[in-house]
Structures are given as structure tokens and as C-alpha cells.
Length: 546
Image (cartoon, rainbow, N blue to C red; front, side, top):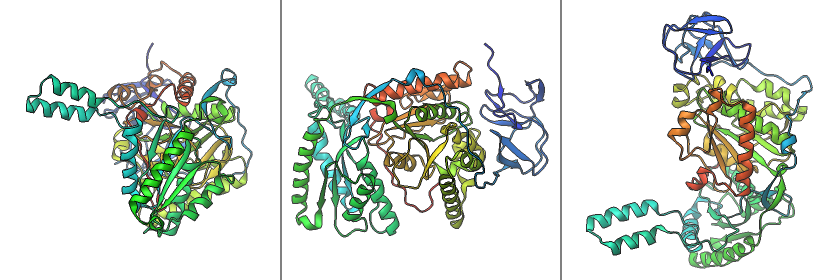
């Protein structure tokens, strides 16, 4: 089978993407046209299909992704020197959107074994949370971590401690007795509560000293985590005098679930007096909460109970060709099955706004998306920044030269289904199907927000490799290319590179991803991020973060 050297992503495109390294001077044939390469074209990068005078529009994925800042000859390499960021404008939608859903017959009767909550949500994991309302309580949260994790069998593997111990014993000349002690130290105690996946301790630097809006947003985010289907209950530590008040947290919880069915244990240090008194009470009541959480067992649930976060990070020139459209297909399948998915990262929707506006199910959603995008862009400009500054050095090195170019590929994570809702941060997902969620592109801030909105599985595509995870939701990592999957196999869960190599289709890869999602949701499979204890948690302060 001959693997093509180039790909044109849309018939309207005027650039080709190299699927492999192409030497300068090579004659490349595409759709009957021959192009003589003016320079070497690295894999993932683009070259011109015609001569571009200064100011010419560069089109990829059928949309404007930049303009020529200097002349580019046909067959010439596109670079940051000769291409400047540009994107098409957008306006209100003017027609209803027609969608042909994928065939979900093979999946219609499938289930996963999850944790059923009283409000109807179903978790893919069963955690207890310990969270501070303000950074002043971080040390006390760490104290509770030390008290609980080792004793209950949730401690981190001691492999690296063992390695240091071995080096130390070797230095000291330890014998077999020392080696026996090393082996014993590397073993973790058995779990006391087998139906509880763990206790997660979330630290942050907010809650006071910033704006009241930031503190209120933090309370909304924390309420989303407590309300999350993967959480059985929570222990909350409050100092007492901070901006993020207990009453604010309880109001946010009530917005998400008026009946407040989950146990939420709140401890106020300034009311408790002695710190030791507060911590002792917190330990006692949390332990009782864990006993109750352990009584919950997995039971079958339809796939409509899945809420999928769609995220890309460490993107490359193959992201929009392999992994992103593959999970976009999964998003469409989930929508057709009655589940939910979240497309976030508003700075990485720059240039594709109109297509998303046209997909909105109603004017309320499209108008809100327009307002949030314009507001976000204005805040960036106000601090002398802008969406055009979004691509990282790694993105640029691997072929994503402008924000619009990056965005056009990133948006493919959202598939083709209608946009049924638009969420501002830190709102909770409300509507089946695809929702747009206002977040930064920042990997951890975005995933933190998606989980706070209810995602019980996150699909994270990467072309460069990033270890991002989350404390309570499994994050599945998808490599856009096989070289990455092989080089960083310890953090990658699935390789979508065979799409580039012509060995798999988008459809077959999506089927494989959905099969893996079910296994992860069941608890049968744990993601690499879970195994590595990659518990990243960074709340978004509503200032500018790209």
C-alpha cells in the first residue's frame, strides 16, 4: 500500500500538508498537479499550491488561517516569517442547521458499570474530596492527606523512594536484611474501602486576595466538583474570613442540585478554635463518610450517562488530521446516543466561529457564543495580548504557524453535531449533545473546568506529548502520530497515527476509542494519567489566560 506524501484537507484549501519529510527540489504530484518544492518541507508543515503575492489569503480546512506577509512561490514552505495570523469575521446565524447523525446501531444497547447517584448522574469513578475554600487551608489539607492516604491504602507507589533506599543501602554496604526491608517498603497496604477509588485532596491559590468575581467563580468550580458524578462526598476546610464564603459554596451547590443529596462536611477553623480540634473532627467525620461511600457499588448504565470532555494540548500539524477528527466522530456518536460532550478552549476557536454559530440549535446559544468570544478577545487585547499569540513554540515547530491554523484543526474535536448549549465558566453541563464551554486553551485550566462542568471522561489529544491528568476524572491521552506514541508510551493510551499512515479510517479509530472509553468508564481499564497519579488541578482566574 502506497502512503500518500501530502493531503489537502478541504477542496477550498490552497496549501498542502506534508505527511512525511519531503526534500527540497522533489516533484510532488497531487490530484494530477505537479509541485516542485522550493525547500525541504518537514512532516506536518505546509507548502503553497500557487504563488502567493503579499496579502494573499492562506486557506486550510476551508477557512482563512493567515495571510502572506511576503511573496511565497508555488511549492514554497509556509513559515512564521512569510505568514501572518488572520481569520474571517463572524456574525449571527441565519439558517437552521441540518445534521446527519452517525449510525449508532452497534452501540445502542451497550452499557458501562458506573456509580449511580441520587440525582440521576452516573460516575465512572467513586472518590471522596477534601478541598480548601481558601489557600490558607492548604497546609491543613496536606495534613489530612498524610493522615489518610497511607493508612487506607491510597498512598503513591514507593518506587522512587525504593530506588533512593537501594542507593543508600549500597553506599552503606547493606546485606540481605537491608534488601528485605527495601522490598517491604515498596509494597503499599491493601485498600480498606475497595469501592472507593481514593480520597483526592485539591489544593489551590485562590479564595481571597483577588476579586470577588474570582472567589465566586472558585466556589462555582468547587461546587461542580462536589456535584460531580465521580464524587461520593466532600470535606471542606474554611478559615472563615475569606472572600470565598461557605454560604457562596452552598448557593453554588444549590444551583447544581437543589436537593443537596451528597454529604458535604464543612469545618471552619476560626470557629473551631484549636487547629487540632478541627482536624480531629474532620478526620472522624470523613472516615464515617468513607464508610458510607464504600457501600456504593457499580451497576449498569446506558452510554447516554457519559459526559465527554474534548481537549487538545501539545498539538502538532497532524492533530487536525488524525486524533481531533477521530474524537470529533466520537462526540457525534455520544450525541446520537443521548450523551453529552464539551468543546472548550475559546482562544482555539478563532477563525471557525461562523461554522459553530451556524451549528447552534437556537439564537440564544449562538448569541451567547458571540458575546463570550468577543468579550474574551477584548480582555486579551486590553492587556496587550490577543488570540494570535496563542500558539506555543512547540506548536509552531510542528507546523501550527497561526492561531487560526491551530483553531481550524482544534475545532474538529467537536465533530459535526448541532451545538445545543453554550456554557460560561464555571457553569455545569445541562443539555444532551454538544455544548461549547468558555475556557482558556491552557491544558490544566481547561481540563479542570471541563471536569467542574461534569465531564466523567476526558479525551485529550496530543502531538508533542503532555502528561495532563485530573484528580477525579480519567483523562485518556491520544497521540496524533505513531512516533510519539512509541516514544512516550508511558503517558499515551491510544495511537491515532495509523490514520496518517492510511491503515485506519476516522470511523474505525472512533469505534476503537469508544470501546476504550467504555472499558475505562467500567473501571476495567485505568488511564496512564491515573496510573501516574497525574492529579492536575488549576482553577481559572477570570483574568486573561490563553
